[in-house]
Length: 450
Image (tube, rainbow, N blue to C red; front, side):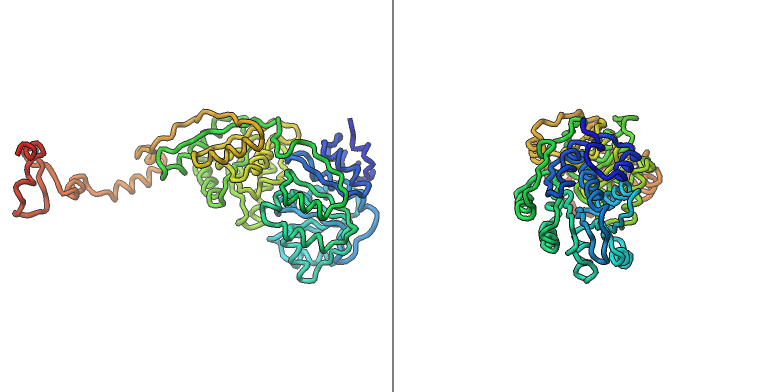
């Protein structure tokens, strides 16, 4: 079995790896590190949670250990689709460069340009950035990419989904033709294939699993759910989510709950908190400092449930996520693979449960076609039923009392219907004065007889 010590890495890097508690490289690391150290281009295709980040950070650090950074001219560039993934890559560099004097800068939105400019002006060995913020600095004349020796594109398929491919192509054209390129993606869409053919030179292709497969350590299931009424779908679906969480008991130590829309992320998080679940939302519209605070809480265990949009689906490295709940079926089948890849990482067991409403069954079929297996159907732990007035009062007695106080009296409500009962028990019409046509006062049976 290959060990990190067999991979010809810098001794100081090996010391940092050992102190981090790692001994054996994952398949993507064992396959990508040797050709990267030889200076070759690498095309890595691997499902999420396989250790891709270390497969490019370790050889980069070893190669950059020799040499010196120059002002405004970074020696290497790592492009990431989201702020969270970029911040995570930066943490990896901090872990593995602790015994080396390499500098880095993180260029992401939500942080002032002034602080980032100061770092770039001093010169950095490693520049980690999202495409948009990188181009902002370049267009302001604060950054030159002509000194880039190594360029990394991480989560390329996510870049495609987010519309970053034109930016990626532009950035490639701003870097030297002689650069070394390390390119990683979970899937190889035609557009991704075109870019690799254009910008990579004879790459070493490492594919450690069939494209778009799910880890065998993840137990999967789906609940087919139909609301009792269309206008009750949201509340009944949230009740089902709570029941699914409760059914897992102590086995659910923490979980990421994915929603398709940002508005639903906020609604689900608020609903869970209302019912006593420790939950917080994370999506692209939140302030960067708030997103990082929420993520840090989830990582250190002080937050149990992270309700997320797909901004959190890629690259979040929280090794001990026990469960993933898909509140919505993702619109793109590939996103299902990345979402559930947040659990069952590094050989651990995990569980992924999805709720599917009738209109999403086509998307469920697409997912099963992609992963090449049927996702087991789970029994619905609660039967959808209309919520009774008594249930509402139990949940919010103050509101029920207010509603009762505002309600008109029963006899008044009856009179509004225009009819009431006389002393003889027959229907009496109210509101037509003394000019009531006689046939109106007749009962239905009397009218038929006449």
